[in-house]
Image (cartoon, rainbow, N blue to C red; front, side, top):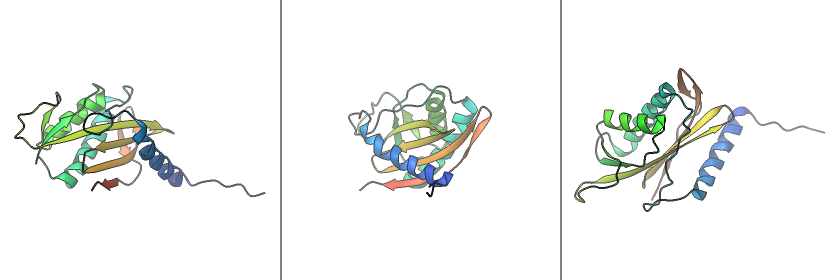
Length: 153
């Protein structure tokens, strides 16, 4: 009898795909994005590293500082680090979802999901979704997978 084991990277890819598929089951806001959530136990340094990396990748997709970002916060260390990283890249950030109507806004939601000793991070806008796995310690975090980019039509 042959035993079948998946390579850890294959397991991570499968877990990431499942996370994206299951994300459709989460509650949606009025703009169609999942409600933002991140575990509170992720340290501030790890949250800052993940937020900085994900925002730099978001800027590659939508342009740095080109819009006002409407951010749905959950007051986790990651939510606060994400807001700071967005401002550091030149984005105006509104958290009350109210603008003057003339300002171009980009609704942004995030989800961090712990999985098998790693954290799967996802940023979602109406036009693009980014995902990546990170190895997290109390001192920080580092990418554990390639960046996944899904363009929306």
